[in-house]
Length: 57
Image (cartoon, rainbow, N blue to C red; front, side, top):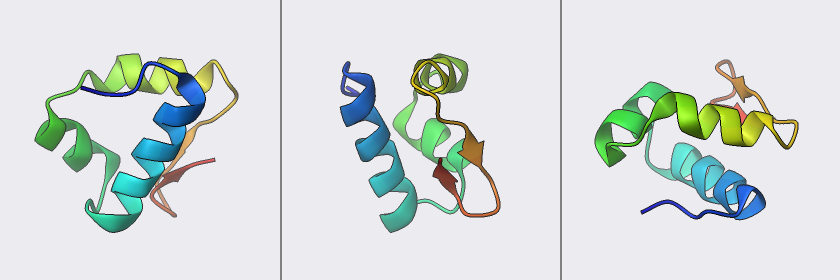
């Protein structure tokens, strides 16, 4: 289960991407999460996925 708070979610997702996954797509498939829902939640606080650095910024 992912954190509900968007700031904590951001930290969690970026840590997972940095430490365990080569792409956001891989993370979503592995954790069986709704990619669009997570993207929208992080977008609501001003963050977008940056593929070239594999992080939300």
